[in-house]
Length: 228
Image 1 (cartoon, rainbow, N blue to C red):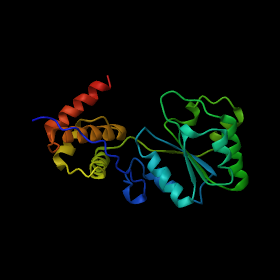
Image 2: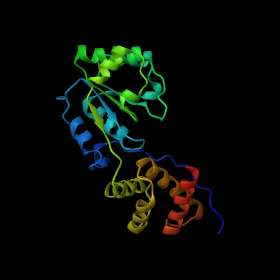
Image 3: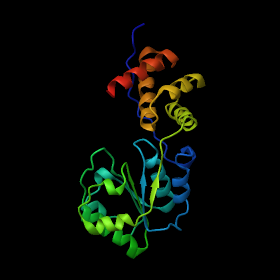
Image 4: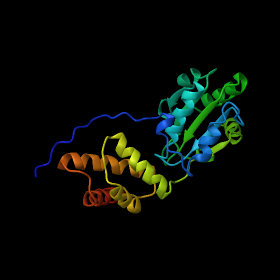
């Protein structure tokens, strides 16, 4: 059977509360954010692995708190100045293995603005602030006082729910047994779950067939080899 050319359809990612899956890995972080505006501090830092749901939680809080949300990759002196006087989210300020640089002075002034104006802010990151390689002592002091929230690696039950949701988001029907097969063999991370779903979506479209265990095994092997 000749392969079909898969179409690169852009499907909407849902960041509303109804699509957020609450589990042991994220419940403490979610419940703490839900205490707004009775937070223990004006600014908090949310930390977790790539693909763990930090961005989803950040969008939920931003919507409920009327906060301005910007990507960490877009954070600079000008964008930071625009956040003064508003609730804000900086999503993915540090989001890779090596701490990238950002305008420390701008962030220091933004944290001071939040204290002075009684506004609230959330910063998400892959790494703890102590691993950010900060050079500005005053910023280190401010972030040391910021409460830290953590999303942990998911367990099997959570991964099952996530995989079902990811397939549903792409409007793909997959047998529960196939998803169980994947969860039992995949790396324990949400980023791997997303990668698997994307690979299987493309493979199923290319073959013009439903997703099966042999197809799942093939995609698991490909992802494993690409990680070497």
